Each structure stands twice: as structure tokens, then as C-alpha cells.
Image (cartoon, rainbow, N blue to C red; front, side, top):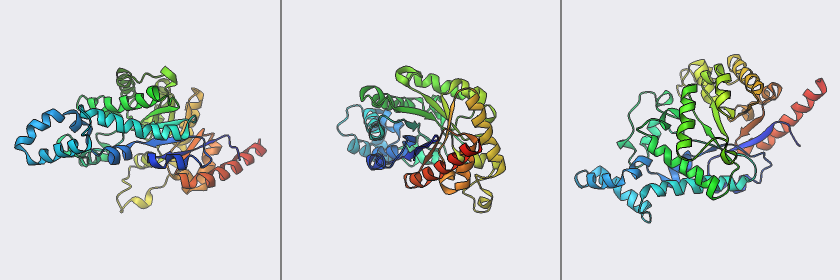
Length: 328
């Protein structure tokens, strides 16, 4: 059945994209690039950028020697090793973009935490050890940081390549973990510096709403971004102030908590007032039918789900929309 609410899907593995695109869908609400970076590339971007320097250091350091060996093996046919990162990332993103073309594919910029980046080959050389990576150097705050900006530039190049050279202008971009409006402005500037200009060639830049500040200042965020996508997992953790990975408090974790619902309702109302769309890409709507129904009542524009729950949730949403029509 057709629904007013777009039913999109979460995709992360490029090789599965063409098969998943066969499921009735309205596009990709969350394309994660972490799998491409982790599996197809596997090397920290800064290690590739600093390859020449590492080659020198490898002469007196056994660990660095191993890093250099992996780079040489994986990127052997690239004179400039950083091009390997751009190419592999562009291919992965393009595969997802092409599988769902011409429907929207919203690519979330890299959201590895420091411990995850440290696990990539050579990562230990560039990543600090944080006690709480969940709330540390991740998402937007990495992109404009001089320590990471050169790596972010590669990411921008890869997306630009998929959009401009391969013609997949259905690809849009989403900024994760953007703590303040100023951070958002800085990221948009940095992206423009590396060829991803908002509005050019239809490029839309969305922001994840996964921190309470994103909702509290939704009006300000709506002025600089083209839309919002609710990350219900982090939003729940940060609103209830709990660590989902701690068994001692995980029983309190529930996306259906009234506090979360108030935030979601408030965000949708504010965003719509400014003509901005709001989607959600968390597991909540597919795990809890009553939560999906609540989102439809709030007038959410889209839900992005894991592929196996798309059909089930579409039927449920259609049912709920019909019911709301009757009430009117």
C-alpha cells in the first residue's frame, strides 16, 4: 500500500544494496559508511595520507613497519595512497546510490568513535585514548579539527566523485553528532572547501537529531540544515542520561519514555514550521508498533528501517494513516 510517510531503509553493506533495493521502499534514510571504511579499506585515513613519512619511520619501528606493509599490499597500484581511500569509499557509496537511483540515498558522514578508528590499521598512531568515546571526539567535531580535517577531505572527495563524476545526484549527506549550531556552520564551510556546496547540483545536507541540544535549538539548526533525522538510540541515552552498554541501567533504556516522545513531537513541529523534513533512523519504529503509530500521529515525514522490517512496518503505517484520515 502507498503511504504518506516515506518508508525508507538503512543500508551499510554495498554488496547487498541491489538485492535490498528489490524490497518496496522509498529510498535510503541512512547509508552508513563505517562498513566500507572498516572492511573495504581497513586502514586509518591519516596513515594513508602520511604514508611517505611512515615509510621513513618504519626503518626504526617494527610496528610502523607492519602498518606500511599493509598499506603497500592493499593500495599497491596507487602512487598516492590516499587515492585508494577516496576510490574505495566512492565505489561503495556509489553502489548504494546506484542501487536505489533515482530515490534519495542519505549518506551519513563517518561516525566512528576514537576506539573504532584506533582499530583500523595505523589507527593507534592518530587516535587518543578516551575514557568515554561515546561522548568524545566523534561526528561533527572531528571534521573541522585540524588534526582530522585532511582525512575528512578524502571523505568529501569520495562523495563528490559519486555525485558529480558518476552522476548519482540522488545522494544527500547527513552530519552526525552535531553538538552546537556553530559546529554545524563550521562543518558546512569545511564541506564547501572540499567541493560539497550545499544547494549545488541539488546537494542537501541533513543533520542527525540525536543530542537534546538538536531538539532544543531545532529552530536554529533548521536555518542551516535541509532536514533532520532522529537517531533515537543516542537521543534516548543522552536524554535519560544512561549508558546503554551498562547492564546495571540498561533496563531503564526505552525509546518510548514520555521524555523522548515529547522531544520528538517538539522537533517535528518546529522543523515543519520552518519547512524542514524530519525522518527517524533507529530501530524503535520496527521494534515497537505503538511507537511507529505515535510517529505517524506526529506527522513524521519518513522512517528508515532495517530491510527485514520494511514491509511489516509499511503495512502498520498504512493502517494507522487510514485510521487518522477517518478521525479527521
